Image (cartoon, rainbow, N blue to C red):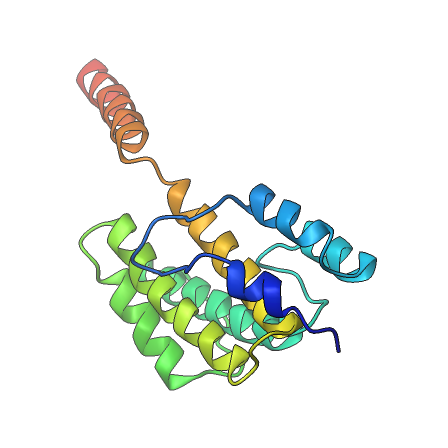
Length: 173
């Protein structure tokens, strides 16, 4: 297993309650000359749904369970039937319920993000300067990228537009 002492030590801290310290593209640029071609290719194609790479298999199991629980609880709250034939985790169910009870979608995303960061920290465990740390860091950046894609102003404008269209339709009846 490769050791990345300098690279991992030089990466800025990534926190669930903080800003993105660097873009994923900048992260890849740092990795390009420091990791093997195989690992770079995995990092370059990495998504939150990836299944290949150090730490990624364990992440995929967790993320799949989280996604299934989100889909299940959303379907139930909408009154739709949904299969519950999957491995349930009590803690994941509680976190999802807490997120779905949040005041707004951004707060819900922050609840999920905090939990996902904690899970990644557990998966990285005592690894210090190897691929596990690197891939854990990469996933955290991907999660923060997702969070920063939610733009409150644009969301309000979209909501207002939809609401006005709905009002026009109601008044035209």
